[in-house]
Length: 280
Length: 122
Image 1 (spheres, rainbow over the protein chains, first blue to last red):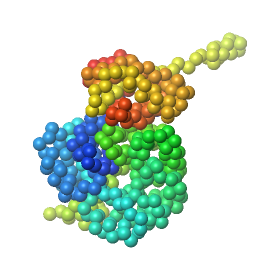
Image 2: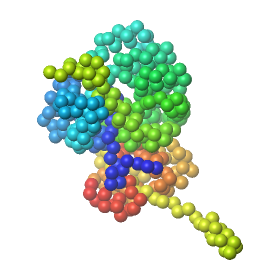
Image 3: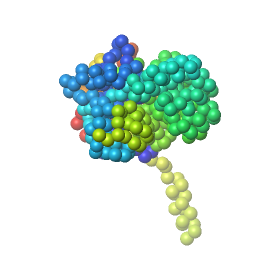
């Protein structure tokens, strides 16, 4: 098994794409755990871009540094011109530091009807960096797969595998959209019977995604900081569920980061249309 | 000539496959300090058995080399073929005796000396 091992030390760029905060654990707990696990990008659910700025200011006196991709982009936009250059520069200058974490905002829409999702999207798109859809309705999912404003379609490991089919996969692939595969139900189960069902469902879903070559990402969606998993751990879980370890190299950081960067560029004031920005 | 070459081939055929070991350095992250290695052992064994069965557990050849309660870090030996399953087991463990816990694998080596050297730096 070929691995990215730097002097045998397991060193990966890791991202947690779905952190939902609760009453028991706050951002500080998740950030300190992420630093220990070398997770360099945390996407916080239900936190708007303006809230994120306040959080960064609040944490300015801590030993670690919280960063925003908007600020990074503003710094780099004069030095790097192409999208790939910006990503490369960000990785070199910011994400490989042990004391800094990039935080981003996201919203997971959980609605059952297309009309209500449309209404929410028009209100929310500019308030969050990432927008995801969590739904059980096939028709809604097929509509969402074609909508540009939605970045990910969330697939929980506990879902029935029949929710995804060939048609949905081909639409997803055509519109270059990603599934977000959430592994947290595997860690939260208490009975063996439940665990067995979840493993079976997740294996089926990943098999379908693999067979139609649909891009997908892994996220842990931890309810406590102790359920956070870094890149290599997520890839090993993926390997257990039937996707080879070597084929998920980009599914735990690169896809998430490039999607996030694309949205940050789109949300920037200087953005005119894809590939073109206004220079003052 | 043919006989002698066949004899050599036969010897190669009889050769046993050497099972390589891997040494995994890990750190336990938990709000409570764990000072008893037997609790860790039991948790890992039980999770391994739950996910891969008794056959998988015996094939993994797990051996708990060392655990330092001060640094909350330790060293476990496993079979190279079972490394990925062992990493899955570590990722699946979320609690010990109703206390939240997380295993962070830090370093993998095929040589115990190097693994111990890394452990000393923690």
